[in-house]
Length: 206
Image 1 (cartoon, rainbow, N blue to C red):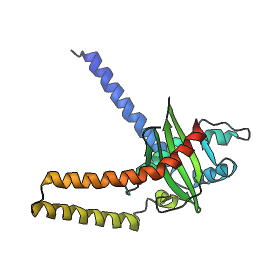
Image 2 (tube, rainbow, N blue to C red):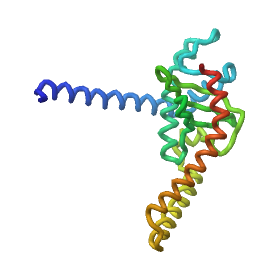
Image 3 (cartoon, rainbow, N blue to C red):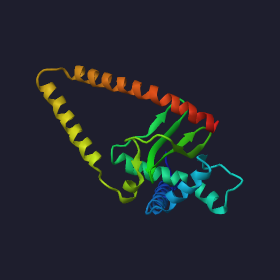
Image 4 (cartoon, rainbow, N blue to C red):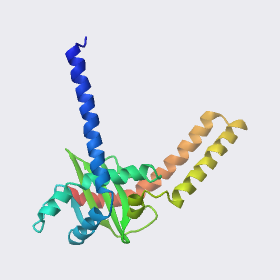
């Protein structure tokens, strides 16, 4: 049975958690308000194409060490925009690696986190540029891109078509099995392509 003191303590813990999350979000918003941090990323990555937030290099300045600790804020800022615009992280569950691809000044970067006896954030320059990269300027400006509108339109069409199939007599279970099967086939193709890249990434962080 909870006592009044226990309820008060629980309330304090919940309120403190809310406060901590809001403070963290405010720090994310502050970081993502302009291009300053990304310019630092660009300059630092020219010297160190692959790094994470707990790295210490011989040429690190005090500013570098402070900014390295902000990689997590950058990851969270990208994540907020990505989830609202149909961009999804690349994820390797076996190695607990998750990252987003962004593009800044026509250079690709993979910004992610590794969960391995703690959480580490990393940045790595990428040699490949394709439509999976999010334009960093779109994140800063919070742009609703043409891509987002096209995806919404196609998803709505898919939704309506599935409803039509059901109305024409296809059992709900059959629709679910078919769509699930198609998605798993696509995931297998993606995983095969990503596995090589992830294995290369692991060699850098272990």
